[in-house]
Length: 214
Image (cartoon, rainbow, N blue to C red):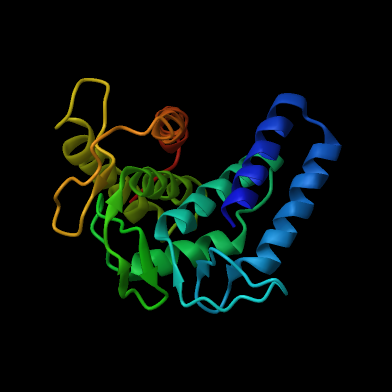
C-alpha cells in the first residue's frame, strides 16, 4: 500500500496546485482501488501487502500507516469539500482501542494489538499526531475533544523524547522496545514527515480555534 499512499498524496498536491478536474478524478479512482484492495473493514486497519490476486490475508499491520491514511482522508475531505470518509473513523477507532501511549506507537502489531515489531520510529509518531488533528477538526463531536487532548500529548512526547535530547534542529529516529536508541543517524527522509507535521500544526491550530469544545 505504501507506494499507492504516496501516489495518492501526490495527486492531492497536484490538485491543490492546479485545480484540475482530471487530477481530482484520477485521485478518486486511485482511492477507490486502494479502498477495495488495502482497507480492511473487518479489522479496521490498512493492510501493507496483498497477494497477486489482490486478496487481503495478513493478520498484522503498521499503525503509523493507518494513521497516515486518517490524515490523508482528512486532507481529501478539506480539499474536495467532501464529508470525512467513514473509513478514517474506522481506522482511528481501531487505533485508539490498542491503548497506545502517545509517542510510543510501535512499528507493527497484529490486528488484535499483539506486538510484531515493538520498536518505534519517529515517523509513526508524526503520523499519529496528524491523525489526531484531522479527527479533532473534521471528526464527530464526541471524538473531537479527546482527539485534541491526544494531539497535545503526542506533540509534547515528540518534543520531549524525540527532538530535545539531540542537537538543535535534529531528531532521534528509532528506539527499541526498551527505549534504547538503535538508530545511529538521522535519515533525511524524516525531513518530509517533520516539515509536513509543522505545516499541519500551523494550519490546523487556526481551524481548531474556531471549533467549540466542551
